[in-house]
Image (tube, rainbow, N blue to C red; front, top):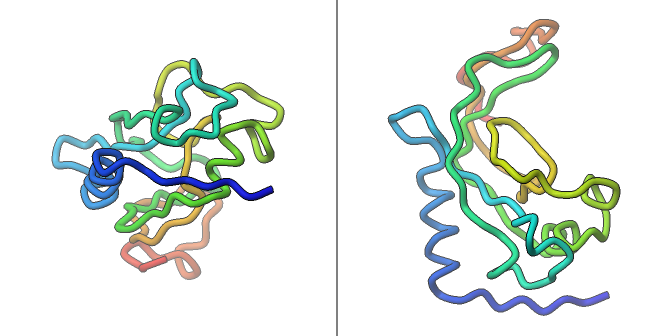
Length: 132
C-alpha cells in the first residue's frame, strides 16, 4: 500500500524544531505522538501532536537513555499511527503524554549520545558519552 504524504510547511517547521531541540535546559524533551482522537487517520498533519515531557530520571533495568540529536519520521510511522502494524495494531495511543516510550509515539529511528545506563547494562559495551 502506498501512502502519499505532503506535510504542511508549518508542520515541517514544528518537526524540525522538535528534532533540533529534542532536550531543553529545563530537563524536558519534546516528542511527536498520535492524537488518540485522530487514531486511524493517515493524515500525519492532523493525527499527530507535539508534546513536552520530563526527561527520565534514571534508566530502567537493561535500558539505556540516549539524548537524541537527530530523529526521523517516515512512512512507517504513518502506517503505524493508523493501526497498520507495531504496538498500535493491538493497543490504542496513550491519552496522556509521559516520559519514556508509550503507545502512539512516532519515530522509530534516531541518532544520539548515551547519557545513562540502567542495571544490567555493560558499561564497557555501552559507555556513557558514546554516540549511537
